[in-house]
Image 1 (spheres, rainbow, N blue to C red):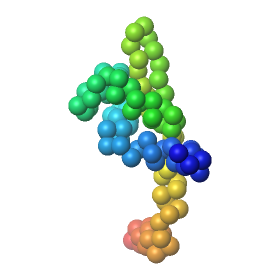
Image 2 (cartoon, rainbow, N blue to C red; image 1 turned 45 degrees about the vertical axis):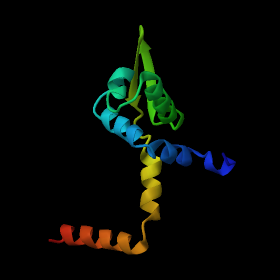
Image 3 (cartoon, rainbow, N blue to C red; image 1 turned 90 degrees about the horizontal axis):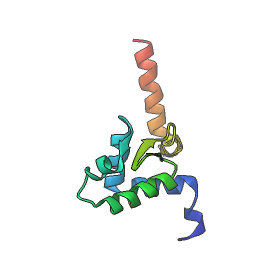
Length: 109
């Protein structure tokens, strides 16, 4: 993989490019979950679910903990902020002006 695709933002977008990983992140927004609970979201085996969770962890989106034999994952607070900021900065100036106009009209209504 080219070195220019290994930045933190690239890892986040690469991790979120998979539908099951996005579903796992969505589920983890509610509460931490075990590997088994997250594997049940799709037709995948536990080892495959672990590979997906490793990709999310490598991107800094989730963290894991172990209690006995049970491994749980949780969403890392603020881990999506860099991706959100990038997407907001990539919006066209026209969209940004329309957003400001909408806020202005709502404030002065």
